[in-house]
Length: 147
Image (cartoon, rainbow, N blue to C red; front, side):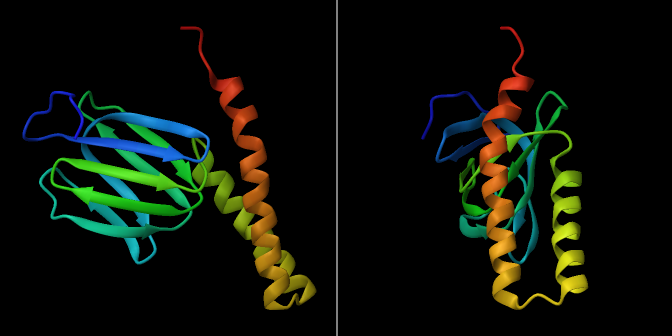
């Protein structure tokens, strides 16, 4: 458990990837891209584990701000007062959902146009994921604000 103060209507959310901690804070609601569909999590949610698919995690902070964190997949541990997300790759962004959708459409269009076999499609998907990994540090450097 962490030592951050929390009201009964808040939960702690932490998102980490292989590169380190991406987000930590308290939230009144979080939406996660699970493999079986989007999960909406409120404080006091029943404990569960969920595999996550690529997409945006939306964290609704108590201040009213919504943080978008793009993940390429991972695992979420949900407890009544805490959500811990272990992501393969994760980075903060505002336009990531649109970019991810555009990339997925481009791969699908190429597969349909060229009639690629399924393992070529899987390879293209893996390359796309690798590109996201390579772009994440550059993206984060450009978005850093003087503090």
